[in-house]
Length: 103
Image (cartoon, rainbow, N blue to C red; front, side, top):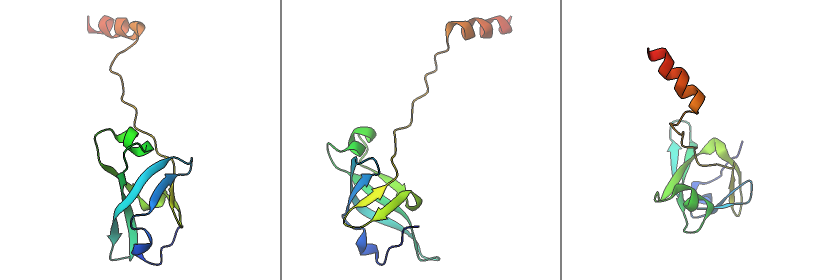
């Protein structure tokens, strides 16, 4: 578990994935005030960064704190990938089976 002495330890720090890809900078944090714990980091995607390429027109991403692996001069998070868009196309064999069942 990563511990933070002060929330200011996260502000404007560069964020990288554990694969070494640059994501952006911490813009904000979400805290659980009842437990005095960080819940998530709001990372602003920097133009040309891995996260910017992955998100397209979106400006940033909320990273749940359990994904944070280390905080020092930089912040390292677990590698994230873009969700795959499921294609609605079925192979020809499945189309024939589906149409045969309708009869």
